[in-house]
Structure formats: C-alpha cells, structure tokens
Length: 146
Image 1 (cartoon, rainbow, N blue to C red):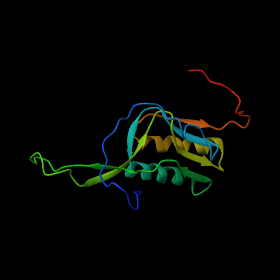
Image 2 (cartoon, rainbow, N blue to C red; image 1 turned 180 degrees about the horizontal axis):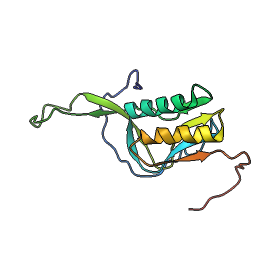
Image 3 (cartoon, helix red, strand yellow; image 1 turned 45 degrees about the vertical axis):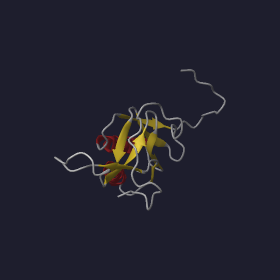
C-alpha cells in the first residue's frame, strides 16, 4: 500500500476539507479520468482497491495513472482510554481530495473500456465521482466564469 517513506512531522493536524481543487482538476496524462464531486479523505486501502479494479477490468492493457498520494497521517487512540498521554500512534494514511480533483487517469484503451473501468473504481471510493475525458480540440484561451 502507498505511504510516505519518511515524513518530517509524523503526526499531522486534521485540517479543513472545504474548497475546490485548483490543481489536478483536468485530465493531463491519459484520455479519460475519474473526477471527485465531493471533498473527502481517501485512504491508502481505497486507492489500492480502485487501482486494482481498473487494471483488472483493462486486463493489463492501456496505462493507468494514480494522481493522488496518501501523505497525511491519521492517528487513533484505543477505545475507553483516558484523556491525556499525548497524541496516539499513526493508524493509517490518507490523501486529501477536494471537489473537482482528477484522481485516476486511463489511456491507450477504447472509450467503453475506460468508462467501465473507472466506473468500477468509483464503487471502491466513499465519494461520488464522474468520468471525464480530455477533448482533442481543447484550447487554452477560453475563459470560464463561475
């Protein structure tokens, strides 16, 4: 499973989960991507389960890019433990996902195979997602208002 080799500060604060993704919000590497529609923490286990679902559906054809990495530690104290005694040990690692972030990308396969594999991957995640594609005729001079 994914986790950092080493970190400067082992235990991190919880932080906020609000806002919209300003980076990683469009398909860059492949032709199709899985975009998050909610903010959440995605655990390393969920990332791995989604990745396996994609590769099994594609039958080792095409290429898969995982665009998120679990670099935030989550600690957990044992049940019925008294207060104090410091922060607990690291239980698992999560990736912070914001609304609009592309989490997985697929390339080198057909439209139907890519869409189906990303749909199966979305079932492994605790948030709602949508499949997006990179248009061949995209231009960088368009301005979106929102």
